[in-house]
Amino acid sequence: MKNWLPQRLPYLRSTKHPARSLTLSPPAVLAIGFLILVLIGCLLLLLPAATHKPLTVLQALFTSTSAVTVTGLAVVDTGSQFTLFGQIVIALLIQAGGLGFMTFAVVAAISLGVKIGLSQQKIAQEALNQTSLAQVTQTAKAVLIYSVVIELIGIFLLTVIWWPEYGLSNALYRGFFYTISAFNNAGFALDSDSLTRYAGSVPVNLVITALFIIGGIGFSVLIDLKKRRSWHKLSTNTRVILLATLIINLLAFCLIWLLEARNPATLGNMPVKEQMLAAWFQAVTPRTAGFNTLDYGAMTDASNILTLLLMFIGGGSLSTASGIKLGTFVILIMATYTFLRRRDEVTIMQRTVPHTQVLKALALVFISMGFVFFSTFMLSITERAPLMDIAFEVVSALSTVGLSRGLTADLSSTGQLLIIMLMITGRLGPLTLAYFLATPKKKRIRYAETQIQIG
Image (cartoon, rainbow, N blue to C red; front, side):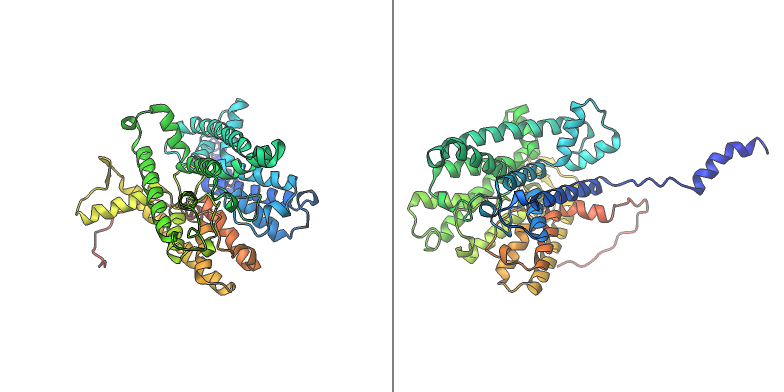
């Protein structure tokens, strides 16, 4: 008995006083990291050196959130309100939020020779949207390298384009700011009218759209393209994203051109070349880019409804874009097609989509639609604005697009707080937020099947 007690004491002590260490889930760590980054940005933007006129705390918080979540909605004008220091702070917040703080953390740990533990790998896996822990380190490196190379090319091209108009130093700075904003799909602009003055500029339109399309298709697609360099060798995900991007962009281009061609407030009075450029820009920018060369408040209701759909879909996974993502949209289309054809398995390009992925896609869309409905309902109470303007603002914030029909600057304090929450939710992902609020637990019990009437 005496020999038994000492052996049991450690166990008794551990059960009586369990460890009080707090274990956070990967989505929780990501959420906390983004919130810390938002707060740091808010404090920096409140400094006297950041603005020409003092900001309120809510204005600084809104701007910082919009930058970190790469949304682009603004309650104050970026070009006139912020000093050079303030604009650089916004650009750095965009870069950190666009690439993800976890990417920088993983790369920094590798550079210092720090071994990444299993728990840290799981957090990075959640941030980089990877299914394999072994790919986390490789993906983090590739994201950083690709971003630096693409952004340097963008800065060079825009500097050359704007050199004759602004001079070398101003052109270089504008090239830097707009490249960061475009590649990260942020939509922040130094001019109050965004890019409307360049509606007829072929070089500006091509470079800006190329930057946010590349940033929006996803780094996993870029990595796969570099590795395999052959259409038939590409992964199914890469081929699906590329085809979906091409089809959606071309359809949107044709529809917007058709819908706005006779609208004198938008394309009606433009030459054919400028009509094509403007229609193309407005077709691809809702994929969370946030720039515009036309006034969305002057566009037809049909064009705005189409823009709402494009914003809701968003770009590719592991990209600087948000929305429900292209892969989710394609899976839902194929699941619907599978049901109508009375088939048992969802297949894409002769590959079967796991049942869990279909359920995840359904959950993501349902949660996103819930956020849209609830937020539209709340803003319709707090704001005096047309329903189209409110719905546009909500979808733009949740999908971190940054397009607006002019409501952002007129939002009440309650409205601004709601939009802030939507932007954070959209960047982290509604499904990630749901995981954070209620971590799923697998049930080992299987119940008898039943039939519920549908339709």
